[in-house]
View: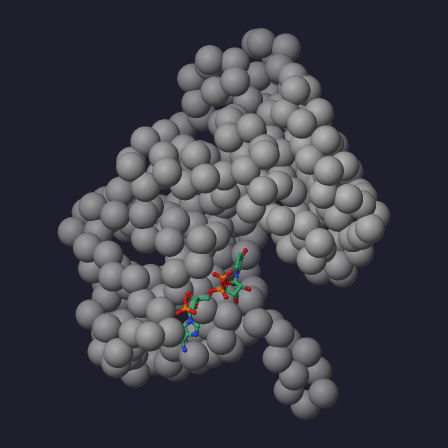
Length: 296
Ligand code: NDP
């Protein structure tokens, strides 16, 4: 068997198109321009790239993009003051503080200072609780993107066996909650899981969010299973740097029914879902119907 390749890049473009359409309607019918504020503290090179891409794609979708670049030496109090200003600004519907923050700042404190209704990353403790109790939440972007890919592929996920490898607050745990919300039977595996290959072999759906290059090999995959590879790892081969996932694509693609490549799978969905969350936040703030197909 050769797996169907799940084209996250193309699907993300579809999502961005839906977002742009909804933004245009919000402007024309209600005079509302959804706005996303992104805050970057310091000069981390990867974060600079992410922030630039987020700003570009936000503007391309017709939304207002507000970038706040702060010096690495900025005090926590000054960052909290900026967050408070953005919370109070009616033109800002989504706020994202780019992580990681410099070591002298308490990331949890800063994230929990964001108005939960504007927390488009879905990391605020209120949104974590809402998602965990099956209520309307702001959902973290990467797991939301994975869920959209899975729904697009399978339609109804009810009753499927899902194994999520990784239990981080930003990917593994919310991913498991979303799959549970769609009535999968969910197992969360982690570094202490015994006989991980045997656990993964049970799965109709495998989501790998580990951060270990090509750890999941084809012999772990049940024939026909769907494999969602969240991992982004840079490895050196022959003096060249290349991106690989947490799944050994070559061997897994021979067994799986469908698989996301790296790059071009889950990665592009993350920013698309950030834009989707910003439109959702703008609709909720104005008590308007939410866009179809852009929320969990
Ligand atoms: P974390 O490091 O926060 O979490 C990794 C998880 O993997 C932990 O729960 C850890 O278990 C588990 N783990 C580590 N080693 C093993 C092992 N040998 N066997 C089983 N489980 C193991 O990572 P993130 O969740 O933040 O990210 C995971 C990956 O996803 C990374 O490659 C990251 O770059 C990528 N990523 C991609 C995004 C995208 O847009 N596509 C967005 C966010 C992340 P334990 O808890 O026991 O330590």
